[in-house]
Image (cartoon, rainbow, N blue to C red; front, side, top):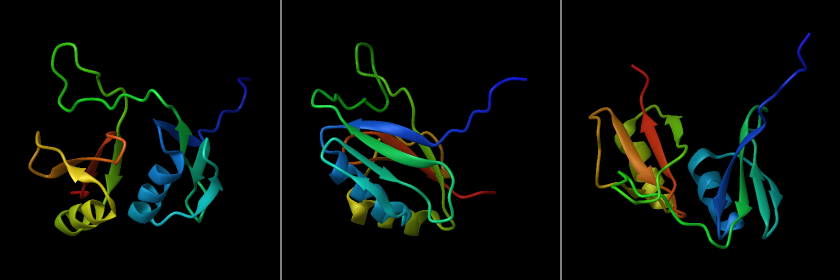
Length: 124
């Protein structure tokens, strides 16, 4: 029998773990669990997979969309919302910014304060 695995969090590098955690806390409404200059963690109130943020002084934000030689996105977050325009406004108010390149009409690509792309979408 294989060992048991449980994904607890996606971890994002940033020069400011506490600041990035607070952005996602405002965006998602999740409680802050760990709050340290080197490491911060958010988890949904009802349990489940969360987000963690670790200090990386030499963090280089990915470029969206990446061109030749640009730092490429290796992972992004997909976040389901109930109303796209209101969710985009909330994300921008929390400190995110809308990416210039938008490849789909029904999805919005935004960048968090550390430059990590994330997508907002409404379930069809």
